Amino acid sequence: MFKLRRVPVLLVVLVLLVATGVVTSLHRPVNPSELPNGLSVSLDAESTALYCTGISNARGTPGRVTFFNTSSASRNLSVSVVSDKGNLYHGSIELAAHAAQSIEPGVVDKSATSATYAVAVQISGGGVVAEEIAETGRTEVPCSASGVTRWYATGFNTLVGSSAYLSVYNPTATAAVLNASIFTAAGFYAPASFQGISVPAHTQTEINLDKQVVNTTNVGVGVRVLRGSLEIVGVESSAGTVSFEQGVTDAVNETWYPNVTTVQSAVAQIRVANPTDVAAEVTVDVALSPYTVSPQTLSVSPFSTGLIVITPNPAIPAAGYANLTVHSNVPVVTALATGSGLSIALSSPQVPSDALLVRDFTGLGFDAATLTNTSTRSITLTTSSFNAAKPDVITVTGGNKLAAGATEPLSSLIPNIATTNDVFLISASKPSLIASMTLPSRPRGVNVVTPLDGR
Image 1: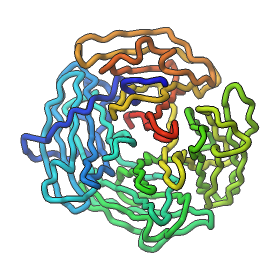
Image 2: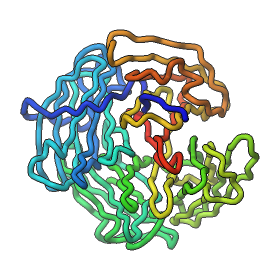
Image 3: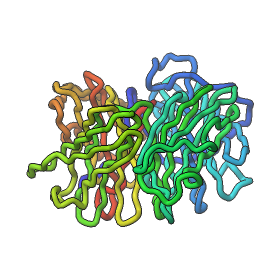
């Protein structure tokens, strides 16, 4: 088993430990609405912002947000926490250079036994990134630098024993308004209660899909923000398995899913929503060495959903991890559903980038961790390695090549990848890089980790 000791994704270095910090030093925060993220701008930026939503303290186990400072100077974080019940908390964190710290909104909130939370952070400079980790510790999603005006996700289940909702946070100083549409195998649905939803300034709310789409599998959602911008995360609870969907801002013709499990007793599916008025002809290319697997195909009607089963599938051997590429004649929205039995977890596709930050937010290590070059030309990788015990020591390794269309283990591309407490910033010569990680699990590969990408 390949075990790592840290992994997500970005442009200057990301990720951190599970040191749980508490928000202190009460003061009044300023509006952080449209500030850029620390990893997508210069480290000399005067101010940046991050937003996270969908965090829960369900079952008494708080979810958390972990911050990491990739810069060589300390940063002051002005933190606001708001729950779906309207409770608001303000505080500050002094985050040292190359240091990590976590906050648990459910611990800060002394008034609620069960709630969902959003966290907004204004930062005194660039270089700070953050990841939110669910209370189960088996799913995570990057915090964002700004709200969006379009958002799509698919694959949600509202079957008996499962639930799905959109966690929505308004990071701006004015009310936002949204319309939400539903896609199912039966077609398009625009519930009246999902139209014209107002989200007041600096508040967090939930849109429960269960109330309008009862006992249904593979539900797709499209959100259009009519006024303002919003941070949105999809939350699925499937027979007790919690997963986050980061979602996408546009439907696309091609997506990549490395490290998809094909092992015995596992379930793996590519779930597809077609938001267009043209039938989608979807093809999934399956790379599973040493086998040759025929492409899997699917036709999805306009404004509808469908799925392709990867495992169990008699056409695909049960032989570890497969690398999938999804093609469609029209732009579609996809998600990877993995699990066993009736329990599934959802993962959104990644957008290729020119930088990633690798580290284990969960503390469990990784069963699989790879890099994929999605382009038709080879790329050159440069890796900066940071160690928590020696924050001022940075080791830079350059010149590693990743061939066109190749997926390679991190261990073959980064020397000493298993070093405890290390954080790896991986930059590429062009924006065609994807990182893929899974956590140890039984059956193997059903817990997929979303890398931190510094949106």
